[in-house]
Length: 207
Image (spheres, helix red, strand yellow):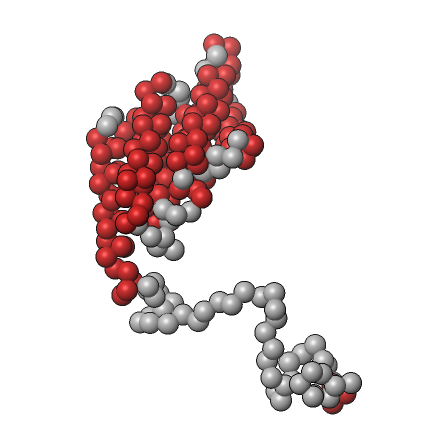
């Protein structure tokens, strides 16, 4: 039996294994992945020489935005929430054109996660439950994990998926709920989204 290239497959003992004399025919459904190039391509991003200005500009924006956010309140009491906001800053300024960086995802994701975290936290702080949870530490861990799971489901249902928002619900459960923490998280998400909207035309995806 001959192929379209005129090769006789009878002389190939295992047709599914590439033969040294058979030309390589790329699979039509396989994506083309360019080979890394440039200086130390496996260690350093190959696009830095041509886009270094964008790298510096967007990383500086992330730094300035986080400085403003950290100055907004006593962040030592909101350590877990700050981690979630910092992850959002990474998403907004490193991949600004991604779906996860849109205002609906950033603000909506933290809003949904905040509601879930607040609900679970208030449930854990009930008079009869709080004493039992304080005596059995693993129950608080289960509640925090449960808040993340419920938050993920609601974010998917409401089309507000934002991975960094998972830290919001967990932080509210682990460190206790208060309205100032929720206001801090939503104000931070709003600030990041406003900066992205204003400067989106000057930013590119760095990944």
